Amino acid sequence: LAGHGLGVSPAAPALPALGVGPQDRQSGLQSAAVHTDGEKIAASGARRALLIGINYTGKPYQLRGCARDVETLKQLLLAESFAETDIIVMTEECTGNRIPTRRNILRSCRQLVKGAAQGDILFFHFSGHGLQVEDMTGAEEDGLNECVLASDEQQIVDDELWHALVDPLPNGVALTALMDCCHSGTGLDLPYTWGQGRWTMDKMPAHSKGDVRLFSACDDKELATDSGENGVMTSAFVTAYRTAAPRTYRILLETLSEELRARGCSQSPQLSASQPLDLDSKFSLVSDIFLNRNPLVGRTSSGLARASNLGTALQEVPKTLGAEGLNPNPSGSEELQALKTQLEAGQAELRGHVTNLEAQIHHVAAAQQQILSILNSAVVSATYNPQGVPGGGSGEGRPLREFWS
Image (cartoon, rainbow, N blue to C red; front, side, top):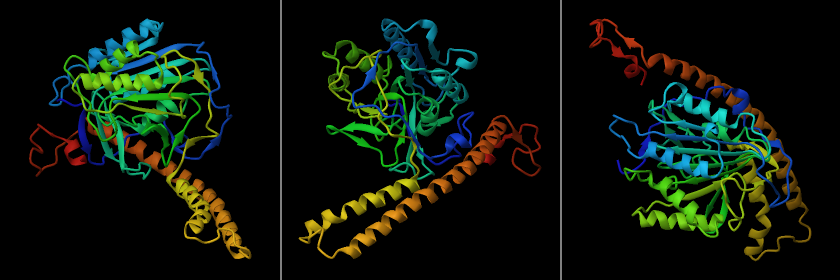
């Protein structure tokens, strides 16, 4: 295939990340310590990395350059003083818990961030197939979840990667991610995306305390290219990282785009982050760590977002009146002010109800997904042999997955 993608998949039972219970699925926001804009600390702690490359050998959609991508990134990290013993490599040639199955990938993601402390530098890389699946929660603006495909053909959606890699990070820890796959623009579900000269925040953002940035091969609607030797994004990123001068975020993105065009690719590399970054600040895999500026952390529920939008719309009423040629603050506007007060009170009450309701919904959804996970594991190898069913009773058996689907 020319691209690292398989298109849009129909909705399927979404399997939860192992160890992600109802308490982790709740969408309630929590307050967090806020630091001034641009405040940062030195990268003085551990340096750890997780590199995943999947060629899907023997599959109809086999790729060729993903395992080489891992080695390419490994050499770059070694040059940046990462110790080889602190770099986890996952390819199909590995054995045991280093085979890049869904279960092993999520376990390794949690291992990467476990025990992270202020001053630590982390790096995550995925090269393989990316695709989109229908979002059943209403949290995605386009109705689609971005996900990656593990070697056992199981999907891992962006929400799960956020829960495993981003949400656990404490303040003062940096995570740089590189995703070389199709539909990877918001592959970690980070709240801020750079585009058209400005940062845009997701309407239902998932905020966190860590300093996270993701370089993606393309936007959510595009395909990424596998050259046969390497994933084009991976090789272009390494070249841009070594040649961009000065190596600011802005110059790195410009150089990366030039490298992709020089390789005959039309895909648009993307940058997303846990908090807005100064594009003219210097970038390094081991650079200083920006401290948290998000006053609230956690995932904003769809209901809470709608309540917040109500407040925003209310604030626009005076502007609208002015645009209509009316005095936005006429004398004797007690009725208007009273209405505004009532709406604000209703908004606050709605927030409370929505938060409680969403928490209950997530408890139920998490339980359902745990059950689906158990059932899915059971049907992988099970067979179904009822009498009267074609193939049934013959001793050959038909995969129960056919009936499950």
